Image (tube, rainbow, N blue to C red; front, side, top):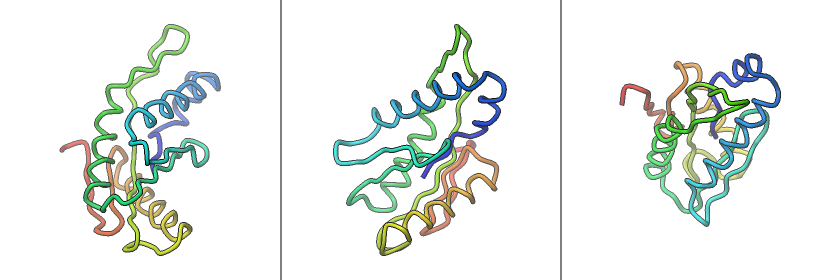
Length: 137
């Protein structure tokens, strides 16, 4: 699971239309950085879920870190104005270690995402190992 850091700031500062543009750009970004067999979808609000079938925890965590770094190069404009730097917080969970059902996996990924946000945002937390990667890497 991933969350656009400080989305409320974008929305409050630049308006509803800018928030919609940012969400759309992140959706396109995720589609660009996923494999054919992966699923990228908006979960709600500014949260997105990525499903990476048959990907081990290490590969999934690395993919999350790659996304975290790559999003920093995404430039989003609204009314000829850059919306500012974008960062993501990501929570990673893997089957079967973190859950045996979709509901359990989503809960574990959401808990890891909550940890990433609580630890300062702009980082990846893998639930299975509770490893953290942040902007200093």
